[in-house]
Image (cartoon, rainbow, N blue to C red):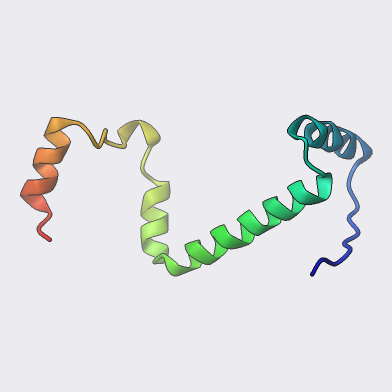
Length: 83
């Protein structure tokens, strides 16, 4: 079931969004609906993750994330993580 939603948005933003929707061959309503669904899903997933883990994850710089295929990374993972 769909329900009408009224939003107040700057005119320029609406114009750019409509152009984007045309290029994607989708309606603006479909794009907004998909985006809102994505936001709410992400929020639900984040709520299930321990806040301390989220805080720690935010503090890891992206250039420090290991290459999961790296031989040294796989060796250290096997050595220190016992499942």
